[in-house]
Image (cartoon, rainbow, N blue to C red):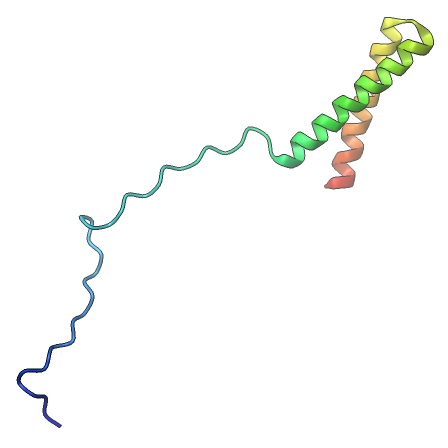
Length: 85
């Protein structure tokens, strides 16, 4: 079957060239902390402050309250890391 002399020739799309390609977007900075890490640290800090405040209310001793709060925050961070992990 012969083509008519006036029929259009199928056009192949031109491969992309460096002139007509859009520039790649700039790379995004990664977050400083992942969401998981931020949640764990926030919950550990809140727990430490709460336990420290309750300890101070009962003992009226700043060193005891600070020690209890730090211990609770550390234990909470380790526990949440294992639990959420």
